[in-house]
Length: 173
Image 1 (cartoon, rainbow, N blue to C red):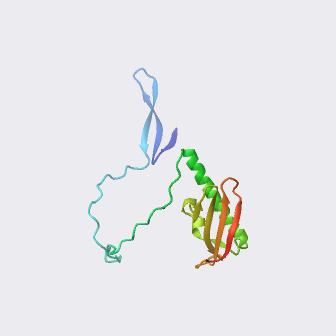
Image 2: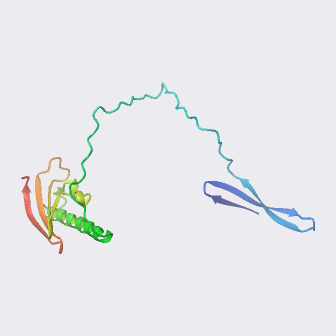
């Protein structure tokens, strides 16, 4: 009787073998036979291979002018318990989405208008001003696939009710 089992990356074949004991009884033993031989344990060369004439290579040249460090957000982060901070970011994200959707509806829907990329990303990075009872999102957009935005929208979102008010929707100011 033979059966095969797979353990992780190696497979082995188990077979039952009868062994005759001194008292005349037969005991069953299992013999393990590897299906795949062990991989070679030869050391990996530490030296890189020499360049091949068949494969073109480009020299690696350090950048003469490294990119400036992207400044972090100047907005202060909210304070409070984990639950309060989590709720703040959920509310801010909801407000951002409602502001974007208000502008999309005012401009004829997604067939005619797309908001700038910042209104599709992290809410904390979106263009908003925060007041005690509301947020004001001021962002740009245009027809789908725009390169230069042509419309500016300003939407107020109430913090308590999430009611939106379109304050401005027109040419760039």
